[in-house]
Amino acid sequence: MTGANGRASVLVIDDDDDIRELLSDYLVAHGYAVRVAADAASGLARIGERAPEIVLIDVDMPGLTGVDALPQIVALAPDAAVIMVSGAADTEVATRTRALGAMGYVMKPFDFSVLSETVAIALADKRSNVARGR
Image 1 (tube, one colour):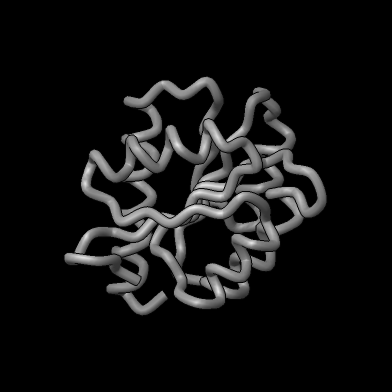
Image 2 (cartoon, helix red, strand yellow):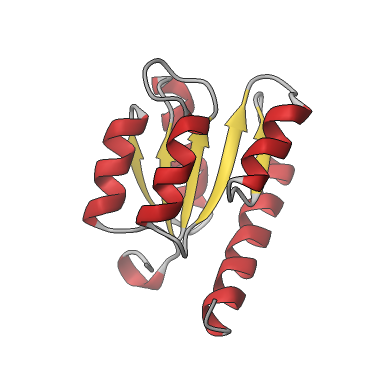
């Protein structure tokens, strides 16, 4: 769902306050409508209220992990583009999350050019799939 003022909507789910703030500030500055959640359960509740176009979710959080939440996110918001965020390069997790429906995987600390490109590609792909009725 497009956010306020026609901007693409993004939900950032991360247990680290600094990461949530960093991502939110960066994405807002680049024209996105951003909501945040401090854990996967809160993120799922936000998705249930209003599905975003893009979800950025931390792979490893206390309680329900991003990997474990991914199938629920896909079920609640099948048109959302999900991008996994991780502090560790783990090709097994990246492969598994792509198989579960994630469209991308970005690393902390962030290379903001990679983050921007990943978000833009995921959004374009998501919008293309919606336009084709997928």
